[in-house]
Image (cartoon, rainbow, N blue to C red; front, side, top):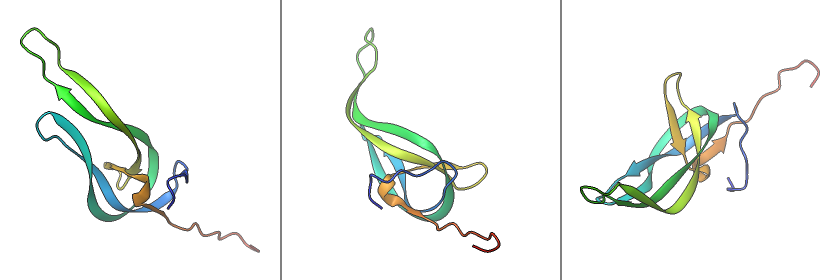
Length: 101
């Protein structure tokens, strides 16, 4: 799917990967984990990659953003929502069962 395509809230989709955060040391990055599940679009969320500065004893912890990534929230069960990169989403065709169509 092209990244320009916008998915509608409640649209049925199949996902081929899940976005997972990894936190090696002072960085925060996002990686793709393979998955093959069906679900429903539940929202959009922007996640950030960047560097964490832990500061010192009297200094606050700060986060310096390097990149913002758009992800979709997909409900795969009643209790589970996962973040998915747009390129890992495939639409499931809707069937029209109306009489005479």
